[in-house]
Length: 363
Ligand SMILES: *Cc1c(COP(=O)(O)O)cnc(C)c1O
Image 1 (cartoon, rainbow, N blue to C red):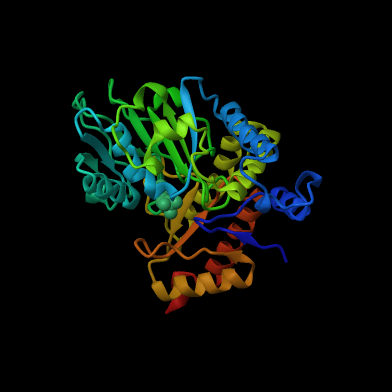
Image 2: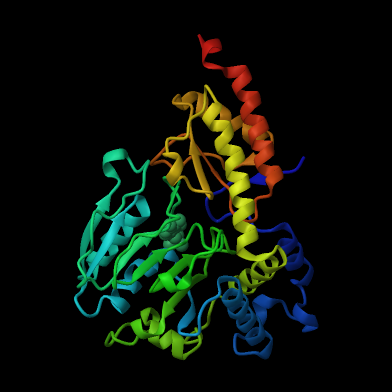
């Protein structure tokens, strides 16, 4: 029986990539050593990290005036690093409060003495719709923080807010490389790898040249300028994670790049939303225009029935469908590496479950 992993993160990776890692694990490039055992200063690894950067630049069409940095510390460390590096003129940022991760970013920015203005919030509708700017933003903000895809709430910005001259800093952790974005629309983009790129332990930062180098005396491990100067090798980088992410980037290129991924992701998401929208039993709470193609929460409204659904799904090889504790119910994450066949298997199981547990039949 095939299994399909709907985990929100760490999440499914492409099968051919896992196979390649397995095949070349004992001896990387005939070196007699695994990738985990070679020096990060070796030529072998230099090739790996340079390829990864170049492939990422090709896929996202990253202009030369943007640096690509390989960090550790997850998306969460960037909640601290971004204000430390970029909020240097006014120590004042704006933020669109689109859910859990946005509010975590606000908390961390405040801890490093950055004033955070909540420009709009989705609390009134329990984050089932995206908050949108109401009018122009204060042009003295150092930047505006935006969570492009809200992993827990299942919402995604496709149209970006207009912040005038204030740079946008995007937490793209859960839809990184899931569709094309215009890099020049952002001052900075960051993403933890373990949602849509590769193993945990690597975080990508893409930042515009002119925005870095203004902070004084930052701790080295938080300093974008230093990481840019040292080509992300100030200390030992996460060698294995960069290698694996590099293979995923090559896989993405072979799939036709981000436009092709976007098309596939839309198709996968549409199949699931179409089922949910006609279902009498299951419901997705997000307004259609703001729905994520990556993370789809859904529920029956009855926690006992949800639990039964999840147990039955697991028996069918449909794994990790339990929803986040903040939202409850179920959540299906449909990242790049989830094949259409996985979504079809999920929809089949949803239909079978509904036929046997329809609300009328319950009492
Ligand atoms: C998972 C996630 C994070 C946190 O990532 P870590 O790598 O665990 O620190 C931040 N933002 C978003 C949107 C996420 O999905």
